[in-house]
Length: 227
Picture 1 (cartoon, one colour):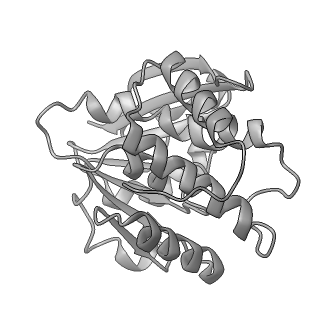
Picture 2 (cartoon, rainbow, N blue to C red; picture 1 turned 180 degrees about the horizontal axis):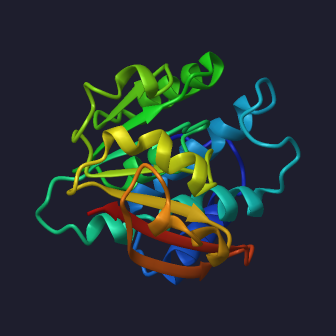
């Protein structure tokens, strides 16, 4: 991918992304880094006009708390081996985590659901700019698609709805015994009571505590499914 950089400090951001990903056990290639840095540049430019992320967020926090946070899911998706990966990202906002993952995992498919039109416009602009053909952006909520989408996805996640008591009932009609739901949480206490929750029966398959590189923010990834 040939790129004309316009955003400044590109080598510094490239190094931060590469080293931060390395701490997560992820090796990013040149093309993947190129896509993520273009994404970063477009995000910061568009954020001056529309509400994508908090204004005046330091660049290191954007890289750590948005881009590297999204990449924490990558090992869980790669662990599927030969199984086809199709991730549903509910309330993706500016594309976190789904679009970041699509930048580094072109062989997988991604469906990004976002009801806010300005953010959808941004996402579709990015798809054209990055020439990604493994992503579908749906300008809607998930409820109207519940029946048609049942069993369609290998994985379901969301950063917008962090509370399991809200998110799991929301996606329950989409989940089959083969579906893995990835919860992006800040603390283990948020998992309390999941296995007894209504709209289940849910089971905790795997948990992965970590601290985000660059910022040290605590994160707990929890993979849950149904019996």
